[in-house]
Image (cartoon, rainbow, N blue to C red; front, side):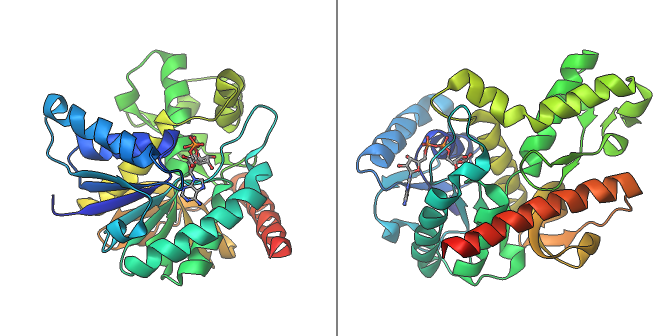
Amino acid sequence: MKNKTTVIGAGNVGATVAQRLAEKELCDVVLIDIVEGIPQGKSLDLAEAAPIEKHDARLCGTNDYEASKDSDIIIITAGIARKPGMSRDDLISTNAKIMKGVTEQVTKLSPDAIIIIVSNPLDAMCHIAFDTSGFPKNRVIGMAGVLDSARFRAFISMELDVSVENIHALVLGGHGDTMVPLPRFSTVAGIPITELMPRDRIDSLIKRTRNGGAEIVGYLKTGSAYYAPASAAVEMAESILKDKKKILPCAAYLEGEYGINNLFIGVPVKLGANGIEEIIQIDLTSDEDEALKNSAKAVEKLVADLKKLE
Ligand code: APR
């Protein structure tokens, strides 16, 4: 294949990302993990599925970063996942160390790559990758809004019994309890959901979306969601690799947009060959703006906690 993506962390999310990238024939995939045997075994297993799935993506699993050299995209999923009773923020001290080490190693070998962060707590991990890599802000992007919006879309589809393909939704803010689903910009065949559902139903779908990750952790008990997170990361990678210029909600480094400064937070961005090619600014109502600022405060607190860990 012409393009190469390195996926770091060959666990549930990382292996599913590798599978989807290969099966969509988007790029060759290098899968890296700290545990010996896991990336090798999973990538070989995926390569053996290729004749049946009919793709020619090359898969390589390794513990050695050398294989990642000159990647176009780096997707970081390394870290621990949460267990029942844990919030994403509880992962911060362990995952901060992992994120720093991984970013140092991988960016040395691929100085022109675009990084997509998946590890949690997402917005804080973006700050570490940004500071450690020294990459420009258009090349460090967090995966959260695509996932949160997909969850909202799935719940809208279940509620109205309509095709998911008809549904667009927009969720802004940090990837946590303060995320900001925006019903005004969430539509079914172009019709805002505010025209199709009473306010109390919308509120309950918003609540379920905010709790979407925890709902899955509650079922799985030993880990967190991975199919939808992997799909979301791959949609972002696809838009970059094919220069599709999709508008997707992603964690981006803001410098004044939405009145927020020096912070990664979820906003609509245009994703193309240069990573974040534009941050789309929409006028928010005062309630929406207040909810976004409230979410930004929660992310600021996490970033301050990171500084204390240093
Ligand atoms: N370098 C490379 N890989 C590492 C490192 C490291 N320093 N530390 C841990 N890993 C690997 C683990 O060995 C494991 O294979 O990261 C992988 C994580 O996989 P899982 O435990 O299955 O977790 P997963 O569900 O994939 O979630 C990963 O994504 O969605 C977020 O909150 C989630 O932070 C978590 C991350």
